[in-house]
Structures are given as C-alpha cells and as structure tokens.
Amino acid sequence: MDGCIVMNATSMIARPLGRTGLLVSPIGFGAFKIGRNEGTKYEIGYALPTEDEAARLLQEVLDLGVTLVDTAPAYGVSEERIGAALSARRASYVLSTKVGESFVDGVSTVDFSADAVLASVERSLTRLRTSRLDLVFLHSNGVDEEALARGEATCMLRQLRDAGRIGHLGFSGKTLEGHRRAMAEGFDVLMVEYHPLDRSQRPVLEEAAARGVGVLVKKSLASGRVPPSEAIPFSLTAPAVASCVIGSLRRDHLAACVAIAAASGGHNDVARG
Image 1 (cartoon, rainbow, N blue to C red):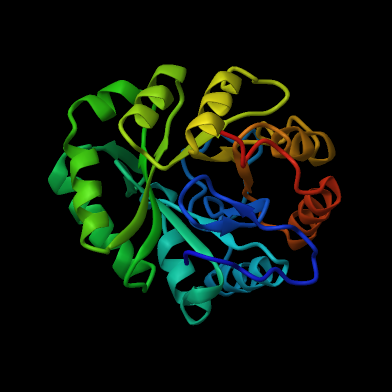
Image 2 (image 1 turned 90 degrees about the horizontal axis):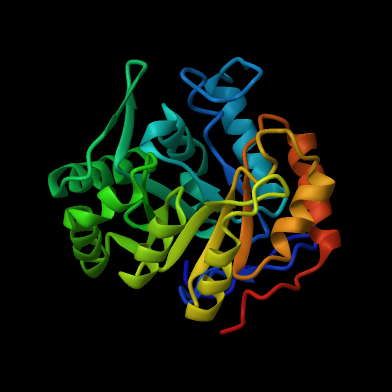
C-alpha cells in the first residue's frame, strides 16, 4: 500500500503517515464495535451487528473515502469480518492490526513473547485474508515500558517486517515514557489518545513530528464526550497527526466525521521535521 491512494468524492486530502510512505485518509475506521461488545469501556452498551450488517458498514466505510481500517485480535471477531467483507478491495485501503493482547471467550490476555507475537500475526493474516499487513502495532495495556523492555515483541516484529509479512511497526501505548521509548527504538508510527479533554500527549506529537514518526489518534472523541465538530479539527491540526481513528456503527455518523475532516483542510505539522 506504499504510495498514492486516490480519494473519492468526499474530498478528504490524503496525508502522509510519517516516514512510512503510506498515505491515509484523515478519518480512519476503528473496527472495535463490529467485533466486540463485551468488557468495553463505553458508557452506553450496544448490540453487536450481524455479519451482514458489519459487511455492509465496512463497504460503506470505503465508499466514504476512508482508506485506513484499524483492528486488533482483542476486538473479538473484527478481523474475521474485515477479511470476509473487504478482501476483494484490499488494494484500496491501509490495513492496521495489533499484537500483544487477545480476547477469547470474554477474557482479555496479554502476552508480549516472541512466540505469541508470531502466532498473533499469522492468525491475523489468515483472518484478514491477506498476504501482508500494512501496519502492526504493539498493543500495550498500559504497561508500556514493560512491553518494550523485554525486547522479544519488537525483535519478532522486525523479523516479520524483514520477511515481508508486515510493512511497518507501530506502538499503541498510554504513557509519555512508553511512546518516547518506542520512537527511540525505531517504531514508525504511534497511536495515542489526544483530544481537548486530554492534551497530555502533546510533547510526544511534537517529538514525533521532529523525528518523522507518524501518529494516529485513538479516542479522539473522548468516548463521545467531545463533539466531532470540536474534536476532529483539534486533532488533525496537531503535529504529526495523520488520521483520527473513529469507531462507529452508523454510516451517517461516519459521513459527518468525514465531512468535518474535509472541511478542516489538510494543514498541520505532519510534514515538518
């Protein structure tokens, strides 16, 4: 997926994801809700969509001009549903998944060993029906430095990258120290929480811009506490940010977010450094 992605009539301007060579839409799709509704942190519960409903939504996501789809083994059946619905359109979007955390039979487990990372990537490739993952994040559950300190996960991800199984390495963490360590260790992309109610990662964004590290923003709407009209321009004008990853089960909500991103233009500090 390196190189140019042609956007559709939504008029969002594709953005470079740091030094990766990838271009992504300013709004990405977070695929948590299509695969899991147990053990969530959302204040309001929701019914899991049927397979047909999930497939229809995923097609609509791409039709809106969204060219980044983000998932994880911890998102229940999300990976399987993406693979089933979008394998025929694989060339039209950047595919992101994660390693380190899984969710089976209602229980989350964390394992940053080399064997677990290898097994996770192989399962994801099968579930997503692809021969290569564009971006794989080390998925920290909050123990950022512990996840990185062992070194096994990072080493295995590099081996898989060198073998052509994955494209680029990412780190999805929670702490300033963890994100800074990930950058120092050569990770290409960070996924950080950043919105008007939590600006604590601002120094990381500035350092990422200086280093050429790409940034994806998670929880940019603060789990529904900040309206998209405020949250999306706030994140997209921050240094190094390429895309806001937003999860939704409604096409109209996603379309509104896409329109806000398109209206906010393509200017931030993403290319500086």
